[in-house]
Image 1 (cartoon, rainbow, N blue to C red):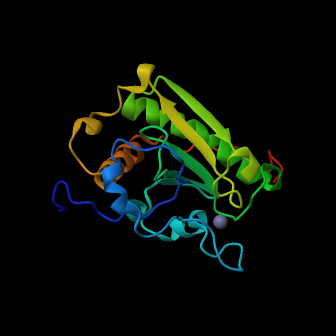
Image 2: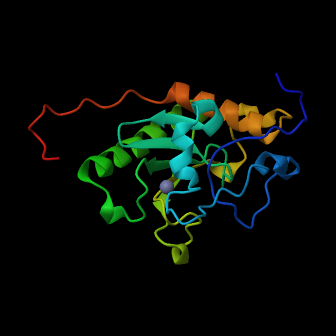
Length: 195
Ligand SMILES: [Zn+2]
């Protein structure tokens, strides 16, 4: 186990913003890089492409579907801030296949269920930033934000009361949400829906 108060490196994905975090002393979590795509290959260095190759714990992956996955944001707007991403390196919502579009919606529903169950979330901000002009930090790879909200946003999971460093908090949050993630919905019989 790690020592309390000792920052631990943490893989994951997210978009750094101008806001500080209550746990900013633990910026050492980000020593592995900003996580922005680089290189000639559009997928090279893309954290949303890389994270699925990591273990759930290392990548902060909460759930994996056939076409999309859910992951904690390393730079959360709020505790439990999740993102649902297609595995494919796709920038635009209209470029998703029908199957990807469906599972993106289902995973968004599952995230709501899990955050209500695990953290008593009272509301949500959910959405996509398409293009850097719209605020997307990693515009080349589509990702839907699911940000849980509480009255006053002061009543996050009990783990927030612990004096723990960010990576440990995120790891614990990931485990809580993974445990609360609902089973996949029943699929229609083959042939009932076009691909
Ligand atoms: Zn990508």
